[in-house]
Structures are given as structure tokens and as C-alpha cells.
Image (cartoon, rainbow, N blue to C red):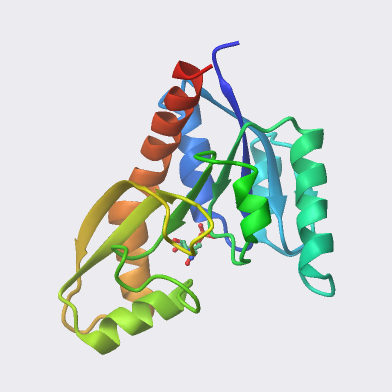
Length: 201
Ligand code: GAR
């Protein structure tokens, strides 16, 4: 079959997942098939988005679990849905070196800044935008990159710049970065990565 089975890992609202679902429904992801959505929290609204789109869901709770048990749970879910590619779409847990080594150039992450700026440990979600505003940058953006064993160190697939405007709060900046960059880049990068996997099969 000429598609790549893809698992989307989420922790929160799932607007990036929604962008992927919308792109698929619009015919923009001919080589991507959503095998499952895996959430690290049972209350992630992303789960509802997946269910509404008819995508199978799994919850593997981070809270109250060791890193090893958490990752084993994710691996079990990935194996159960036979995923060849993983998209971290607002996934707020760090995956170990051992885990990411199993999926070379098979894990994509969307990060809400222009890496290597505002990346690495502690930079996630709104904190990234708080840091950008604090530093006073006039341009920020989003990055989609492959994940390797160095945090935020994998090869960059796509980036897009977004203006920081006077009076921005972390929330207004986050929204603009999502609308103008993340929701556009992530589906595009997913299709590119899927095509690469298919070309190498
Ligand atoms: C997005 O802005 C995503 O880039 C960011 O969390 C948000 C999730 O929103 N991810 C990270 O910070 C990862 N380092 P969503 O759940 O609505 O897609």
C-alpha cells in the first residue's frame, strides 16, 4: 500500500492534530494514514478530536508512571497499531534516547519557535512564547524537525517565521504562531516525511 501508518502523540488541546485531520480530509496527505492517536493524559481534548475523525485512540498516562513503563506503554500502542511514523503534536513528555533510537527519521516534532532559538529542556507550550517575549525578539515562528537523541537537535524539516507584535501576550503570540506557522507546516512536513519513507522502502 502506498501510505505510511502514522501515530500522532498528544497531550493537550490537539489543534495541531486537528490541522493534520483537516489536511487529510482535504486530500493534502495522500501518503499519510492515521493509525492511532496516543495521549499522555486521559483528559486531553485531542482524544475527542481523534474520535470525531474516527481515528483509534489510546491513553498511556505519564502521571504516576516511571519513564520506562510509560515508554513501554507507548511502544505497545505503536506496535498494536503498526505505526511506521510518529508525529509529536503537542506531546509534552520527553522521550528517552533509547526510545528515539528505535525510530530514526521516523519521529517528527512541532516546536513553537525558530530552533535552535528557545528550544531544549524547559521550553514547551506557552513557556516558549514567554521566553521569546522576555528576550524581546521581533520575529519568532515554528519548526518541524526530526527527533533524535539530542533534545530538539534533530534535522530541521520546515520552518516559518511569524512577527511578534507590540502588546503581544504569550497567549496572543502562541495563537499567531499556530495559525500562521504550525498548522501549515506540520501537515506539509508529515507528507514530506511519509514520501521519504515510501521512497526508501
Ligand atoms: C503547540 O504550540 C506545540 O508547538 C507545542 O505545544 C502546543 C500544543 O498545542 N509543543 C511544544 O511546545 C513541544 N516542545 P495543540 O495541543 O493545540 O496542538
